Each structure stands twice: as C-alpha cells, then as structure tokens.
Image (cartoon, rainbow, N blue to C red):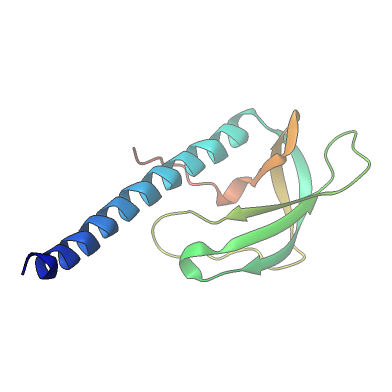
Amino acid sequence: MQLEALSPFSFLLGAVVSYLVANVFHGRDIRNQQDVLNRGLVAEGTITAITGAALERRVHFQFLPSGATAWVQCCQVDRRDGVVASLPSVGTRVAVRYLPENPRRAVIAKLVSRFVRD
C-alpha cells in the first residue's frame, strides 16, 4: 500500500524539482545574456540557421570580432517571454554583441529579454 502512494509522490516531487532547476538556469542564462549586452562590443553578424520548436528556438549566427581573422559561430536560445515574436530569417544581417575576452559569449541584441525573473 505504501509503495502505491510513493510512486505518485515521487513523480510530483521530480516534476517540482525539475521545474525549479529549469527556472534557475533560465534566469541565469538571461542574466548572462544581459551582461554581454551591457558590456559587449558590437559587430555585424549573419543568421546561419534557426532550429528547434517554438519554446526553444535556437538561432545560429556567425560574426567576425574586431581584429580577428576567423569567423566565430555561436548559437543563442530565443528566451523572450510573452507572445512568440518573429525571428530574422536565415541570411539576415544582425547586430551582435560579444565580450572581447571571450568572443564565444555573444548575443543578438534584439533577442535578449529586457526583464529578469528572480
């Protein structure tokens, strides 16, 4: 009898823990993106691909950092809240912000959420 009650409880506990962990990572990712947006240098990039479903769309892009000889390729998850916004199409030129000490930390400015949930 106790084993029958333990299974639904375990499932519910797992779902709650999973939700909390996802929420923590989501908030951290948004804060990291905003940090790059605030401190980063500007470069022009190009959208190379868009993958994933509506809630986890990944925007792949490339750009050439100032003074670099090789293109940097990055991927950014579109985490904007609210109504699903339109994304730029593949091949579109976009403004990219990146950290000069680590150009792999780059974001497409218009895809960064302006609000952080704590």
